[in-house]
Image (cartoon, rainbow, N blue to C red; front, top):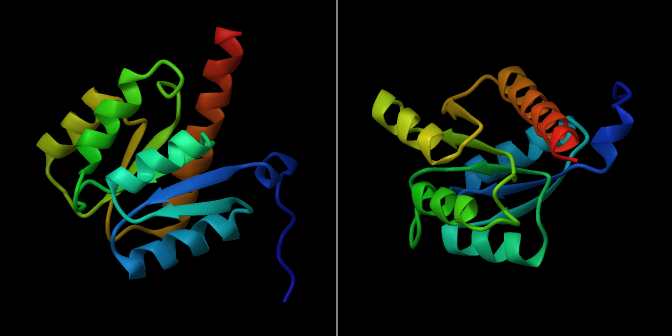
Amino acid sequence: MTHPPQPEAADAVEVLIVEDDALNVRLLEQVCRSAGYRTRVARDGVEGLEAVEAKIPDLMLLDVMMPRLDGYGVLERLRARAEWVNIPVVMVTAVQNDDARTRCIDLGADDYVTKPFRIAELRDRMRSTLEMSRFKMSLLG
């Protein structure tokens, strides 16, 4: 089976998946790999921040409900540090109410996708979030 050619920029993209459910991790890894992205995984918010500390990802897929530190706490900490403030974050969560969506966006999430999601939609949202991040960074210099 041959795969369609991926854009060159995808080769360098690393996605940090911060998710506690093993099945969701596998699915998100498959979605990322099908888009040509490399992945790292953190199983909760604390591990997610440790992973960012070790190496800043190009994009983060972040769950809301996790043990030790939830997605809200991760967003608060990301946006509080100058070197992390521009990490693009797509929330991927089962929390489907408007209050959670609004809270995530207010805390600095770039997008919000609810589970279950359509794979093509998530891939498109990841791509557009990366494009917006690159554009924003080009404006910042």
